[in-house]
Length: 201
Image 1 (cartoon, rainbow, N blue to C red):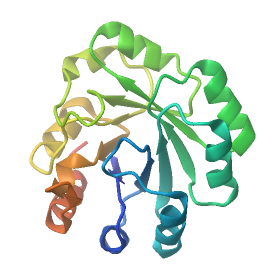
Image 2 (cartoon, helix red, strand yellow):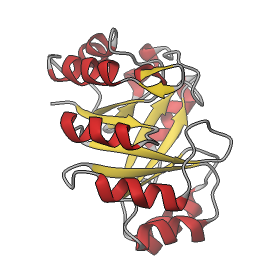
Image 3 (cartoon, helix red, strand yellow):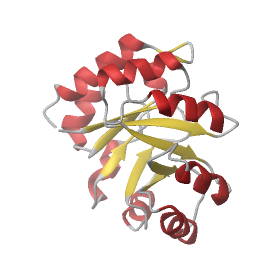
């Protein structure tokens, strides 16, 4: 079964919804330029409400490693997702310092991007069309992928089943595709999760 990550949660009602839906992963965004940004204190409050069966992923963009280590040591996050220009040394440093699994994100525009992802030192890779563009990239580029990956970028309840059946990702990751007016929409969240679970991936 394809795993599910619902990302960019920031409100109590978002946590209540995921606790009902039980995706494999949920994401807190720690990036001040994002409308989904959460503070350390807010993330702590929300993590305390989260069902322990769901892994909390912290999403970072070229963040100071000390901040990530703090979130990890205080058990606010279970997994670290790097969405900036972090190099191999950064990835290995974060893995060693926290003992947490690391997901490294790559924007896929050409075959070389897939090759870079194949060679990542991270535990998992995430393939995306770019920072919250809401549009899928050319999935044909995935023919060169040699490892399990999270598929992100332009996924919605309406197209996620097709995505799974076409490219068979390890996991699917959605944020804006389950929102209405930049807020998480419980109905869209439920339809997305149901469609993933009904897909023949």
